[in-house]
Image (tube, rainbow, N blue to C red):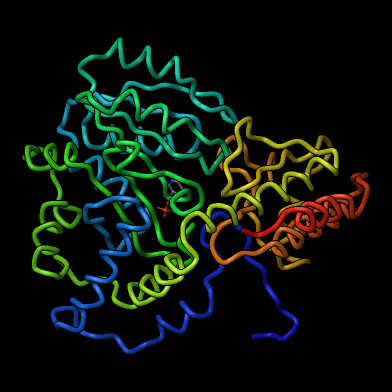
Length: 385
Ligand SMILES: *Cc1c(COP(=O)(O)O)cnc(C)c1O
């Protein structure tokens, strides 16, 4: 490590990990078939129920979030079954690719990048496809920053044969998504986004309706990602395969912290960070990309005449601040600042300050310091709950 090498990670995954979790993960590895492990596992099981706001066990796997997305497609649906896929960004496309890989029959609702899916369109598509067995969506699209109306969609699918499968990989713990109360059927999360842990754990919560479908489905191939195996193992207070023991130590620590502060305070915290950041962007006279932005990240349009790739490189190499650029067709066109993981108000200030300095250095005229000042003002005028 070089002393002149202070790096800041402000990307929407992976995210900064708090020192308590890093220390917890440095503990000696224990064997996963010992009572000692079962005790840790049982505590994690209870705490995950709190986080997902469900009474049922949440399954977890040693994979990135995409593993749990694939597991949902493989366990919940049979080949040729019709599913509705909301495709408004890179991760909606991923649901579609997974559905096609497993031989399902996806019906696409294509949404302009930067916009939320319209509830009317969802309603109409459900009516036109009474044989649909599932609806796959993101709580928000991390590629566009857009929040979809999941609660309203859940009200449409709730008492039907349609399983509502929500990718909440960067949403869980950032804003309310009460699993049982909304009547969501499957919800996916990952460790390296809102959970402030390193990459390597994925999670799935499942409703009774979803479990029924899992038990009926003998046609889709799956082995490691078999929900039935994990359910059986959990009943015996263990996991089907070798779990990511060290990451689970970290998870246990994070879940303790989450219970300590409570979900409402956690949600208020991320809301505050995202609102301050947006106030900063507005004060600079720049535009947000998302029409209905989520609290997990702020996406700024790169202003006309600025080379977006150069901007990212300058922030990363000269200022040592890693934000994320645009994905796929948004490459070079947007800057994505995450409000995820172990972050506080001053991380928003760092993000805006870096962004302002880099833009200025590239010759773009902005009122230097105006974004930072607006965010400072926001933080001074609003109280942390
Ligand atoms: C990050 C992300 C993913 C992909 O997760 P990996 O952990 O990289 O596999 C999928 N969906 C959303 C909404 C995400 O933010």
